[in-house]
Image (tube, rainbow, N blue to C red; front, side, top):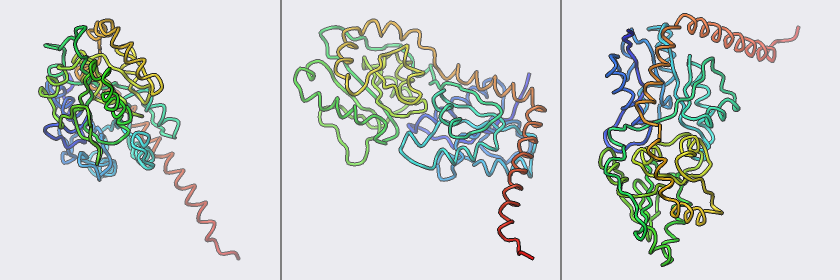
Length: 354
């Protein structure tokens, strides 16, 4: 049996702090329960595998960058293997630098994990080049997020709709959440539905007719979600998103947009809508609530499955370490040759004619 020392590049936080934080917490716990040592630094000279989760040093969650990893391989331990998990992109927050940065950071990786096929294809189309590419879908801790004591809607009652986000970017879905809030001004809708938003809000934004709950996490969050009957996500270009996963594990069927990687998680366990047909789809969802509810007992995604897939990948890489180190040597040689070509090409500009 392999006993690995694995470094995960995340500074974890207590309490509500987003999906990347929960990923690192859940993976660390799983790996340690399976006999492996987990650290979040590059101080030891015998690390078997390094997992890059956030290479941007400006991020509070970043324990080390790809540059730190490169220096570790050069000067401390050249035999450590490197996996890069990519769960972020420019498209999510309308930025213009993240993808290029992560593609550059990825050059140090022996293997890459994407959190959805959508984000994998996005990066491959934009030039990411890695020898070993994988998709591992995310999941939440089923000891916390499960359908025990879930509230079941009965006809004649108001149907309670919820969503939750740690991030407060407008693209998290606030266009549709605002629309629901506006619908509640209509007595017909107000008599029929309630809407709760759990988490942070964009600056200078408030709900008028909906319930707002400040960020919560863990059992407190799962208990709050289970007070509701239906979940909605309006998140745009979300690589995966933990919010709808946590709700689904709590038994809530999900209304979702076909945007980013969310559909890969939700399409068999909820109802797709768009801005043009939202009210129509909401009525259909309510009228067929029991049919959607019954599907949720088969929802497959959880952190145990996710972590098991990561460990299988890690073991595969370690068991084939020689081949991956040879591939790294070839890749670095090719990069060197390309750099040398560009250096020589540029030097021609400075040749003094005879």
